[in-house]
Image 1: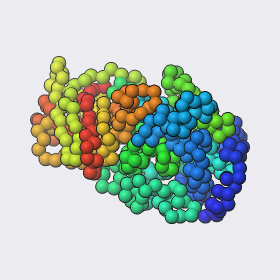
Image 2: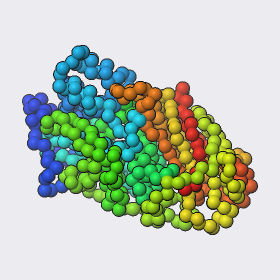
Image 3: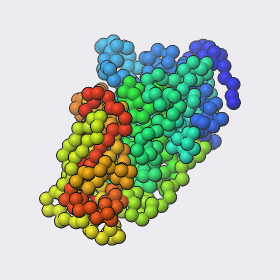
Length: 503
């Protein structure tokens, strides 16, 4: 255990100018700073430093780039107002203040949860966490500070999906600043946030098995699979719509930072396992601006943040590659793909479906010109055949008026309905974290949505249906979307496009 006088720290922070409290850690340093699991002794020590810094940042006036509100607003401004209104409130109008100009440049720039390219997700958030980490070093006077990560994907049942205790202690003299009352009850009570959900919302075997960073035809790439999968699941399961469960409030919670440190670690692990970040794309050369720990304004391109060690940090532990998928399952092996498979054949469509508190259903039917097979979407009736193609269930164009605050579980069964779908029919999970209109400062509200694209490899499920010889699967398949809890009244989440494609 460590000892830390919060009173002495805060007194010292009050006497020293925030921008000059400690030297900025250089990217060119010779030794790497190590980010530790928050449950480890080293991680716990760093959580104490973080807690004291959070308290100091919260007491700093919001016009300062090192304030807590500034950092929150860099991700997205308070969902009850707009960036323009907040700048006017803080600085007045007309304005010539350089800090307000910087705020106008950097606030509301979360990528890609406001309609930007989905591939921005990982590099932008790495920048965001990196510069935040530097600001904590400045505020705390600890140039050795390294942001811990919340290891919610741990194989240890005591850690998997369980908030670190330091974030659940509202009256603690050291860690109290890390607590937020507006989380879901399971989160703040120390229960696994995914308890009772079908499947495993903490599973990352699918993104870790991806061969490509970018989406390849109808198959999600690593970046999008991680973003829409465990990343969004964590936000929703921690909740609520006034906190982590909504894009425009998420970064107000200190838990946001240790969540995204783990997302960054998952990316670094994928790279160590052989995953390649593509540099020869326009989006990797895109420039982003942040307030930093020294000069306050720094502009960087995405590809400059592709390598953690070049940035001066590493992790205490990395995630190994998943075990090879058994033959016939729906998982995609990173070693089995890699060639371009962008030419997809659309085989079926379903009507849009509005979701609620009860299971919702829609039916996939063949599109014109598709030759009939034993099971709709399967290559042929021979379940042992392997033609190199896979079949994907695609859900996209998601929208919600307000956050439903639950995950929805997707099932695929023969078209006659019949018995409720079981575990073998469970396709995966979707969330509406980035499917809500929110102000992006410079765009119309109806343009400020994330990509909202899911694709699930359902080849294994279709082969299982074929083995059971259900003739009702020849001309139709039933898609069921079931809430993993009680959704918010009036949310009316919608899945506008549901398709089945072979690639």
